[in-house]
Length: 447
Ligand code: GAL
Image (cartoon, rainbow, N blue to C red; front, top):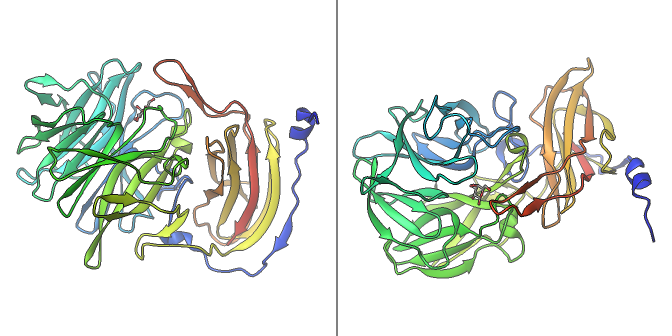
């Protein structure tokens, strides 16, 4: 049957079927919600991608790419802090755009990683620096006396007096305080005692190694994580193990179910979390969204199971509590079933509600586009707005938006089809992303 697409996209139905009217608890104040933009203490999206976390004195410091929605050029690296991994305070742009040099105008800055050097007490930031075509990769070095910065940019990290001309990077601090630089495709360098130089290449071109490297060390086994080369697109990430950081390294395979594309994310860092007598390793990944990375790229953080030589994240927890390390299966709230499916620019779903928070579930697939969510109060003021990415290569039904906590009141939710979609090309000019602009919302929960 031939579907009249124009008609289909023009017909926007908003069927509201009130079900489960009972209003129940709001879990979002204490839960990590994967794949939705997080809102910081200033009401803006938490914008720290390709991130890492440093834990110090009971606070978590999140560093990442402070992305822009208009260009891939480096605008700075951001620092946020939190006591619970859920509620994030914007600290500052820890490393701002430089006047010139490796992180000057029209350059790329990615994957900032911060470590406190145990010997000097200095905070060291290493990051991928590049030109806009990714033809001038180097590792940039910046330092600070205080964890939140501002960081002073020094220049390229040197190995044997020369810059390291590779791109994706990560860092790893071993139990004995030794610092390592992880480079894509399996090069590992040990850092000097003051962390300001690379002094030894301890592993070289580990077979089957990939991009976005991250590492953990448990019970004498080193685990190296990485992704395949698919630009901002997700793929099934994998890991290697070794009895020593120098190797021999063995490829173990994937750690999320095959075909989930690492639950739609790309590895960036592993954070050890102390819970009771044990350490739980939290996987941190990026769900990129080009070109609206600042607004719409999101995070996928999940606890990993590490036993012997095996690492896995057996199930996707869309919402989970990082204190109890348990998934939140009951989302509560008043459930409103809606049906909004449109690819027509400017088409809208409008839903008045009363309460303190709203959460939206929707469908993403390979022809999804951008939707704008806006919450307006009864004076007509916008109290929150965010651009949401409805694209995913692998289809997914799930939470797409959770509003910040609002003062109890009467509001209107507006979901608007923007008429744009995420797409980009890799260094070889191959097309990635969506080709249509579908926005699909299925359920709204009111708290
Ligand atoms: C990815 C890489 C990202 C970014 C992107 C640009 O492969 O992991 O950090 O560089 O390519 O296309």
